[in-house]
Image 1 (cartoon, helix red, strand yellow):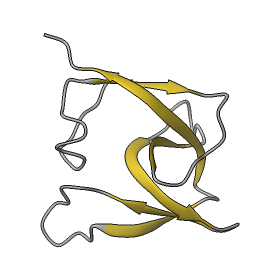
Image 2 (image 1 turned 90 degrees about the vertical axis):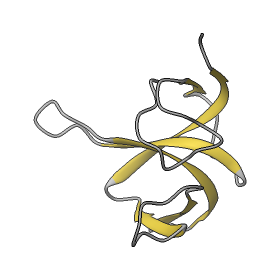
Image 3 (image 1 turned 90 degrees about the horizontal axis):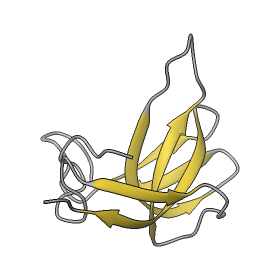
Image 4 (image 1 turned 180 degrees about the vertical axis):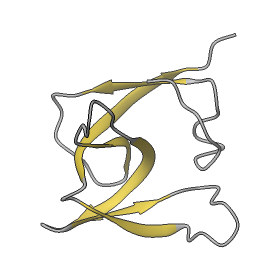
Length: 93
């Protein structure tokens, strides 16, 4: 998955490739790509560090939040339905 945005610098930088294994279950203290269900053929994705989760929410951390954004926050699992565990990255070159 091609990384865009700067919220996870220094772990992931724009232009790097995050490698995921979609068969692995979510795991605390690991980076994941969270995706929404396709809506009209479109979906959103966000790469974040998974702290924990409940039946309702993902508790996440971003390393380089934008101004006025929290470093630790939650996303609803009803919207962000998949957590794809990152198993590596390709920095290119």
